[in-house]
Length: 402
Image (cartoon, rainbow, N blue to C red):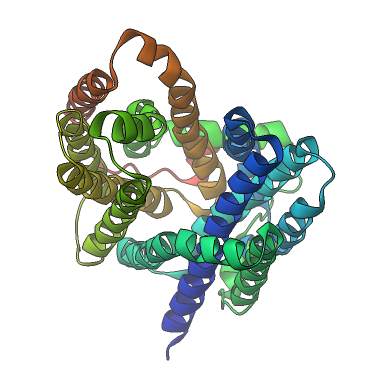
């Protein structure tokens, strides 16, 4: 096995097992909070605590990611996450759980971005899409199997057992990260000369650098536009399915599995794609996803809804993988952490803002109308954002400082 293959399998198994842990964490967390409070609002609040770090801290954490050795930072984060999640079932009240959920999300966000930046160091740029797609395929398979396994663990044992499994997956992830082989010259370059700079100077330099990457900015705008509707879609899907299509609880589980199947199929599809314009994949994926959401608003049966949801999962994940790969391949190593931070902040702001607006918009329009009009408006916006052909702009670190 070559060093490249070894790094690939270590990254694939580590991230996949960590993804499995995430599914255990979120299922156990939601069920435990509901069991303690019998309040859907409390469940929503703990979910918000999971999203907030990406919105509030993304670009700032990106500065530290660019300063430090990304592999060591990811290892430290995975070990810290293991300790934090293991403490959650033993906390005295829900307010402490909210706090530790926020801490776990901060550490998890830092770890995820560090690993995304690390992938750009481990594999050749021209092969990044294929490696990302294969890793995401494995992760999405875990996302399908995870909730089923988590439910079994909780049913046979307890919420605490699920958090223990979660912590063990992070320890496994830290182990695989420690075994990665990163070229000495690449490791030495990380944060070179950055430690003497002022934090805010680095922050501003990262913002200026991203503004000089028109393709990354366009992909960010397209993804933000999509999330404005997708956030509402995620909130209102249960209402649409239960109250309009009249699905049973078992059928709703199959709908969720359909989305997961679509995510896996989309990732598998990208493993077969070579020499493609990543920005075009982002644009096309979001355009089709938006049209499918509009189509969902017209469906009348469980079976057609299931097929449409498979499609939404497939094309949305293609756009997400392509956008992350675009950043990895076009942003320089000294800036990847900050660019990913800015991108994720915009992405998550669209998602959370849309979730917050779902209840307000539902007071004016029916769920069917929200899906149809929202999907069509997103499709139009995506077409408008896709009209200009953008070529890759090479921006050096020196040019970004100017």
